[in-house]
Length: 329
Image 1: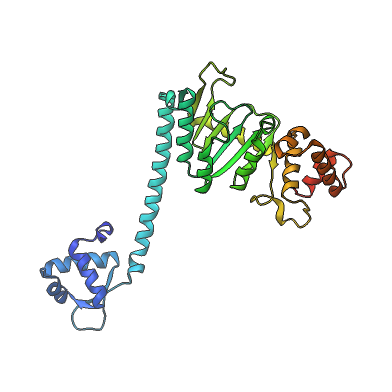
Image 2: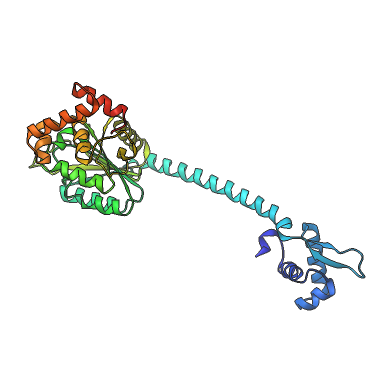
């Protein structure tokens, strides 16, 4: 075990015996270890040079006692750990250089092209099933491969503790059934925001792989194609694109989600009012809100007027400004 420190087999056994016995002479050690006196003398000389043992003064004959292991071996272990850390850092740097060079030599390893709805659907299923930390995505209106309701893998991943951040295009929120679907996802832990327009459909898994269509508007007669991007500056650009859109997008909130402002004492809104305000600030039209929530348009307008009254606002713009100032969203 201590061979890495430079001890031979006899020296290590002698040192262990001294630790147990506290003190011994060379003859005693030779007898206990079953080795010749010369071998013990060499082992003791090596241990003296390394500071593992010291001679005991004031006794008849030459006797030895061990130095405390943490004192004698601790500094050596610290030096070994530093050497290992430097070696690990060098390995990481070499591995990064290797990956970069391989990508430059064989660029097609960075991008796979997947053709057909079934193949793209299967790839998305596999990526979400194997997600460990986070999935982020742009959801545009008019699904190509699967609808939000069909993406059951998200619910399974949320149950495993995978974080989801999703930006919904405003037009998508106006599609039948989308508002309840988004609310269900938020209840399960999804963080949702809305944007007036998104440049591309896209999903990024664990910041290591992205999937996005190569042709934005494929007709029903044409099989869609998607690019699967791994690593490199292209993936970094896609991550930056998402984060930039996320910062500008409008949060969608319902009471009970982890980011809802329930802890803010001044927030007077219940779950329905909070969700209605989220959709309103996201720019969803009154008619679409009414249809999605199963209400009449007049009821929606009455509830919006109620929110304006709570905020002391004369216009919807003032209501949005007040909601932002008071951290209702």
